[in-house]
Structure formats: C-alpha cells, structure tokens
Image (cartoon, rainbow, N blue to C red):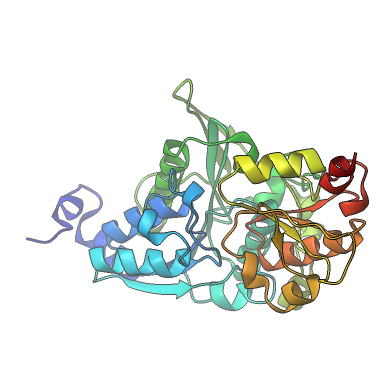
Length: 364
C-alpha cells in the first residue's frame, strides 16, 4: 500500500496529480514559522525536490511556532536541521539545503533550478527581492505573511495577466511602521495555518486541481476565525519599479529596514536585554577605550573583531550594539543587517557618552 493512496484515490487528482508532485521542484525561502509547516506538508504530499533556504540558527524563542525543531536543536542551522529531520521522515524526497540568506547576488542562480517558490520570510526587503527575482525568471511565487492575530496568503506571477508583490504593496514601509513579532508577539498556530495554506496553493499549482489564489489575497483573523478575499489588479505604472534585467537586479539594494527601528535608547536596550530570551547587548568599542565599562549582562566584542567574525552574534535574534557616540555602532548595525537580514539589529542612540547610559547613571 502506498503512503499516497489517500491522495491518488481523490477524484480529479489521481496518479497523474501524484506524478506531477513527484516531478516538481519547490524552493521554500525561510525555515521559520511559515516555512516549517509548509515544508512538512509539501514533503508529506510527495513533492520530489524541496529546496530549503535559510541562513539563521535556531533559538529558544523560535520553538513556539517553528514546530520542526525542539530544545535539542537550539543553536543549530535551521536549513540543515530541517533537511535532516524531514529526510528521516520522508527519505523518498530530495532535499537541497541552502544554509545562507538569499540576496541579490545569489537569488537568481538558486531560483533558476526550481519550478515554484514559496516565500516564508519575515522582512520586506526579502519579499521585494523574491518578487522581483520570480518576475524576472517567470516563476510562480506563493507568499504568506502574519501580523499579531492576522495572516494573509496569495499567489503572485501566475495565471493570465498576473499580479506581483509590487501591485499589492507599491511602496516599501518606512522604519517604525511595521513592528515584528519580537515586539508584537505571535501565537504559533497562526503561522502554522498560513504556512499550511501556502503549501496548499503550491500543491494546487503543481497538480492543476482547484482554483488558485491568483490576483487576490486571502486574509485570516485568528480572533474571529474569519476569512475574506480581496482582489488585486495589475498596475502597469509600477512596472518601472521592477528590474529590467538580471544585471539590474544584482545591482539593486534590497536592504529595506522595516519593523523595529535601527536606533534604540538605553532604557529600551537594557529592558530588552533582560526580557527577550534571544538578545545580546554588545560593547563594540576597542579594548583600550575609556571609560572602562564592565557588566555581566553586556558582551564585549570590539568592532575590529566583529568585522572579521560576524558569526559571534549569529545565534541571537535581537542584536543591540553600542560604542562611544553611536556612530560606529550605527555603521556596524547596518553591516550586520546586510549579513543577517532576518534578524533585528539595533544601535544604541548616543552610545556610552549619552546622558542616559548606565555609565553616566551609575556615576550620579
């Protein structure tokens, strides 16, 4: 008896639908709250090749929603761990592990090998980048997103006269406009549901069954258990925002800082260091710099060292940096954000010389 028997006996799906799944190549970007359920259902359904792209490590605060992982996996690479766990369950599926964040330098070559892309990222820069890459390569894109108690899922670049992400969101949000789950919180069942809906749309596209969520967005409210759809129409005026070629794509800056601000004051920095489980507060001043400031809750990693070895902070979801005046930490925060786009990276405003810094507070 085949494990796909309950699928192949479905009217309209059958052996033909199952063979289409087996031949399909699907890339899942992000092995987080959306990617975990999507990967699980796509593998269980028998998708032949699954790419898993994520450059992050597993932290304890992930475990309420990233249900592939457990406490024994904290600190390990998400993509590698997801691939290992899924391979144990479904040895007939080919898993391609990509243990790095996608960016405008590597995305085109990675996406080129897949039939369909599922975006489970949690930042706007990656979403715009994945959208543009899929438009250039003519790949269907299944996108999901969550905010507090609400979620949405849609399919871009698919069907007749298709829409893309820029038709839905022409302008990238500014800093402070869209908080992330570190600040606003999330119940793990919400990304579980939205990620499952993303897998559903992917299976429909591959097998040809049902009506795909193209040119419309499905919204879900967890509190009311309500679903509703909103139609989206293509906007020809926005085509100029799309890169005209792969070369233009590779030169485009997708480092959009959304969610929490890049700057943070001392009170909030110290509060977050003590209240968030996956948070590090780092003094990036060089060892000989004055004033001497040592506390057990503050890590000391000079900027010269951090520039050479950014993996020293890779395991944290929230990274807060400070220096003497805030200038160097602002620059270092921007560099870390490029390296770790999925993380929340901040610079303490005014640095150690700010009147509100612990040094000045303790001297009074």
